[in-house]
Amino acid sequence: MKYTKIATILIGLAVFTSCTDELTIDPVGLVTEEQINDTPTLNTVEKSVSSSYLLFSNTLNIMGAWDWTGGLVSNNDIILQDIASDDGQKGWNSNSDQPWMDEVDNYTFTSSNGGANGVWKYNYEGIKRTNSAINFLVNPEIEAITGITTARKKQLLGEAYFLRSFYYFALVTNFGDVSLILTPVKTFQEAFDQAVRAPKAEVWNQINKDLALAKELLPNQKITSDTEKWRVSKGAVIALQAKAALYNEKWTEVITYVNELESLGFYSLNANYFDNFSTEKEFTDSEVIFAFDHQSNVVPPRGNGYCALVGWGFFAPTTDFLNSFEPNDPRKAYTVNVADQRVNKILGTTNGNNKGNDQSPSNKVFIRMADVLLWKAEALNETGDYATAITYINKIRTRARTTPTVDGTPVPAGTLADRPASTDKTTIKNWLISERRVELGFENQRMADLKRWGIAKQVMTASGKNFQDKHMLYPIPQSEIDASAGTLTQNPGY
Image 1 (cartoon, rainbow, N blue to C red):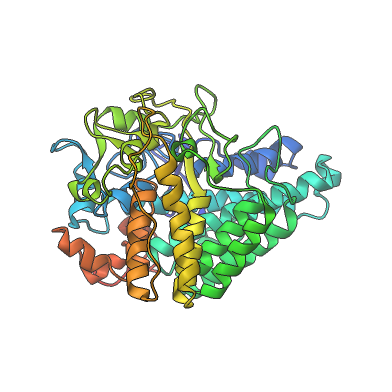
Image 2 (image 1 turned 180 degrees about the horizontal axis):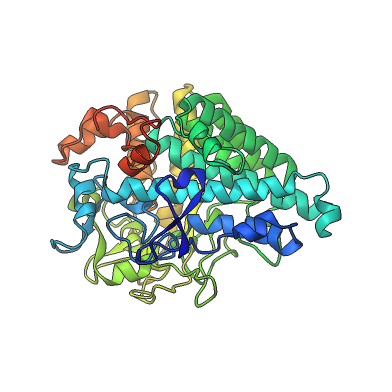
């Protein structure tokens, strides 16, 4: 017999099940029950935090052994945000492989679909790990027990608060009201008591609380650790504070947080657009604020498994997405290579290297400065500062047109001209919508943007998709509802 996850992964409990269940494995990097129950060591505390990062990754089979239909082979951000949108489709050619992805693409999915199931389980597994880490680190005796320094304790605790807030951000934006679990769950009674959906306002409040704590704990420097440059930084915390304000339309707060981030002087737009994604520029560029550090051939596995899926023909752009680029915009070829059927942003290369390699070192970028500046432009437009909003949009366009093409030649004169002066809020908003689409294509932003702007149904209907009002939220996985004996309730329409 072995430990395996029951359906309610959100509560982090385990039960004994049949050893013949070949699809279910202990999640990679998990701190064991024995480590939790025994007196923690410094290694246990360190691992409790570092393992909490893994659920962000594109590494394959962290949550299961080739459980495709359960949506557990990889993190499904790209499925729910890009393939579900008007930007992407499952693959370059029509085929019957992984029909659950097609269901997301054409909006025929039900509450048993693997896409939502995977996102739910990945994020709650991440929350389980961060809760364990926080529980260790807030123990007033932890320094005496483990020998951890005060500075290291504060740093790790700040990271853990940020990671928990990031996981809850993904849950509340995809599902709305979700279970709010902030401590390790030790008994089945505790599990069932907590298997209820908290109002999304409470979840957002907790996200903001965690981020405020994280900001006080992390050092005031661009890189938190010179030897582990992948760790959460204070800049990442401030950026996520701004993003949380953005999603709640707190426009003045967005501007304040972005101003705070800019004042640090840590980040600026890279001169070359693709430096954000190039494996040769990781942790040396000026723009990336938070990314997952994929590495080749390490244990536990940490490679970018999406590169294997690209090699198998998954993840392709729609014609509408390709047509959304203005003539000669170099970002188009840096994002996708249609002739060779690859997504360069995922591969981290423009020559096809890493295609088919499930141990690719190409990082997954979550937050970069161009994204942040466009948040500020949106907030400025919403608060009536139209001239400054346009200035920020034009910063992004300037960098794009001054980036050489993929083959190294200059972009033709006249490409991506600055947006002119305007005081029409709708016109500027449309410029912003267009700029975000081409700047951030295949970075898992599009569907979330369409939903928060309130135009998802309009855009998807125009794209021929059967998007209904219920699709503003994804369904709570049916397996979770069943395992909670109905304590968890379903989103309307499912």
